[in-house]
Length: 269
Image (cartoon, rainbow, N blue to C red; front, side, top):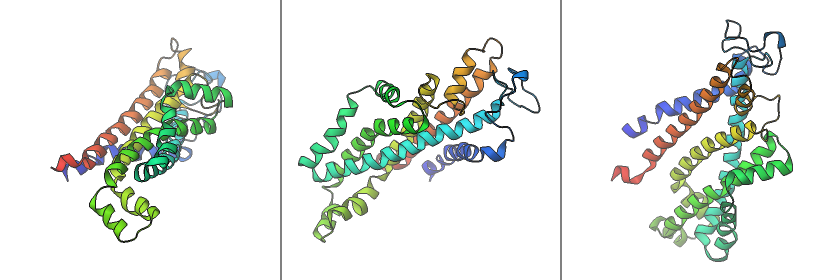
């Protein structure tokens, strides 16, 4: 129970960030892409609590909408990678032989490429955008899920409850989905939280380089990129997106640590 209570604070933080992103249209009345050049680089005020950027856009509104974009790309890509990677890992780990060769060993090829280099290559060829970025991140993170699931499936397929299901006449699909998968869900949840945090970082980095989200759509990486040229006039414009990025990543990583402690069987030995 003590370890499970450790989940409450990081889980509440992740939920809070998600609600801010989801309810961004209701939490601010400012349009995140509306420019007010006459008041560019304005300091924080009652109307604009975090000030205005180099084009006079409301910084707080752009932070909220930027969270929406960053979290959507990160979560959707992690979900796609999770579904594909888990399916590959389960099939390769349980069946072995040729099935392992054409599933797990095949996705290992992706691991031979540095992630950021592969992401830069694909985005450069297909063009920037949230959809392209989601596709790239999904491909990058499939091997991680596949390796975790593969290792767990290798261990689980020799255990008594799997042998019992096999002896009872259960089909391969039933054993994979109803018997093995629920018992390897713990490590997969940890991998999912790690993937989301990593995807937020890569999305922001590619957007900073101009290869991610396309302006004027708000993104934390784009905000950092824009603030870099005006930091001598208003350094707070660089601070706000950096703080949002750090807070989101630390919160997700804390959730990952708490999930690891909860699902670690050695913690209850």
